Amino acid sequence: MTLPAQQLMDGGYRLVPVRGKAPIWKGWVNRWADNPAVFTTGGVTGIGVLLGQGADPIITVDCDCDDEQASRAFYDALCNYANGGVKLPVRIGRWPHWTVPLRAAVVPPRLASARWIFKESIALGCVEIGTHGQQFVAYGTHPDSGRPYSWQHGELSDLSPMDFPQLQSVDEIIGLLALFDDIARRRGAQQIDEPKGTQKNTLVPLNALERETPLDGVDLEDAKRHLAMLDTYDDYEAWLRVGMALHHQFDGGGAAYTLWNDWSKQSSKYQGSTDTAARWRSFAASRAK
Image 1 (tube, rainbow, N blue to C red):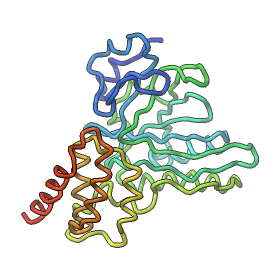
Image 2: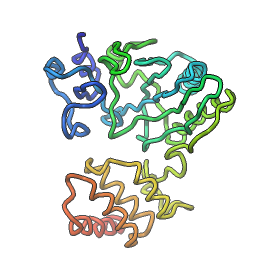
Image 3: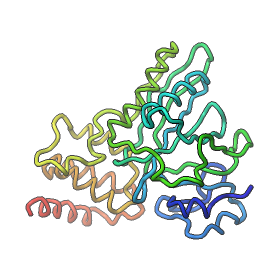
Image 4: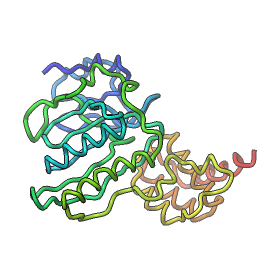
């Protein structure tokens, strides 16, 4: 199979080589290919596209639903919701699962609908949002079906990120997840767990920084649950913004610092509490200016 790496790079996508569904490089979140030749080397079976990065960040809507009727209904609902009813380019690896890329004005945390069991088809289903810290395989061979990934209603290699409709807010992204939940209910499916990350998404996009006063109704437990879904601690700017948002929201309190420091420890770049404490103090100076 010839992989269209050059076309995708020319289109403005950040690419990583994958084997099966997994990137083969260490530190791949902050490392992407600058030469299409890397996709012709041994062991590379496909092209992964980095999500939530660059000037026009791409996210994905991943329909992980084994109920074909619900899967089709959600695709049509997504096209109506995000693109005025016009069919969106969709990548298919193992039908009825599919992935649709979209642009995001605000990169969301990891989000997912509730998970459902469809009694009629004895199938499971949910929808997840692919975002920063993740990638999706745009071209290659699906490891389960053994067939090449295919695109319908538009080939990704012929499109740039700017060709996709843009969702303007996290709330708008959460709204499309609710579409799937509504479809599942109408199909008589039984909900077996709760949506992921769809409540009080206040630290990303870190809109507390844009306000003179902290956001109402957001406590440390909310922040702790939210940080558990974020893995952007290796991205310096994202790591710094999270610290600034926590400092702002909780008025520089010690418990908020501990939360940020504990989250920061997951990073390979963590330099110790002396460094994070100094950063924390600097946020107060920045707010005073």
